[in-house]
Figure 1: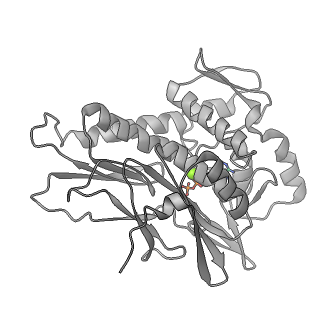
Figure 2: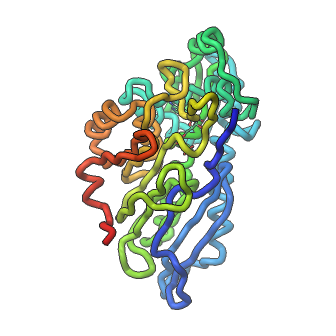
Figure 3: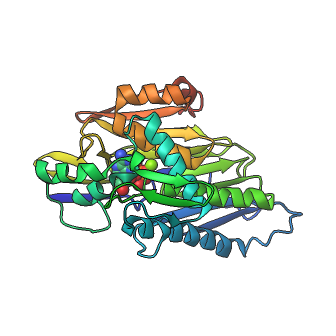
Length: 340
Ligand code: ADP
Ligand code: MG
């Protein structure tokens, strides 16, 4: 058995990002949510913003998102909820309520393909916080967990900002949506400061607004599956966010079978179809992040249907033996940067 774990590497290559001393470009790099972040802000010459102080503010925003949403922090809000018992109400932040509400909505529109209550299944398959050895679980083990999986078993009280579960053992995993939320949170903070031109990237999930240091729309490369060097496609991303889910950055391989970290909550098993990656564009990165995971679970046909229903540009890379096939919506195709 071999585990492949590439989630810490950049998925998206940012192109047109060389720094020129004449450009008023500020670049901030760091670590958060078990991965890296890379942020570019185009400064205004007459601005009162202290760009050197911005790094500390970015880090404190991301520390706060982790304190709310990380299952790797025992005292986080989500960890407290996960440890709570049925019918107890747990007070949480408005931010966490917002993420849980969005997650439940995407669960319902995707027919349960997206489901943050997959936590116990993610752990059972060895992709969770328990960091256990990968071993294919038995049908019995999967069936024992199924009763504690289901997004409708989490209730939200919007007035009191609190969460409750219908069944003991329900445990939420926000890995498929919290990165996108963190990206938005930092981006919205910049907007609040009056910054109009920026790019925020956490672990490959990206939000852009305005233009880059060359006065052009931000250009983003989408990496080729199974390779960290090549770019499969490049797009312009104007006032949009982009997120990707794939089966090639975090998986186990046993007897030639690839077990992805994306679990189909309806079967209790990792997805088995041949979608290597799904890229989704949306105004908000949180939505792009979660919808990309939902489409990844649904597969090509159902996934395209959901993208159409939600009216989101989508790009899929499908594994066909040793080659890759591309499928994209018309709205995504329009953003492609043609290579000569
Ligand atoms: P990445 O974390 O690499 O950006 P995703 O956004 O697709 O990729 O999130 C995948 C993670 O989400 C998994 O590692 C797991 O923790 C969790 N997860 C797995 N299956 C689902 C699912 N069906 N719905 C929601 N979250 C899931
Ligand atoms: Mg996701």
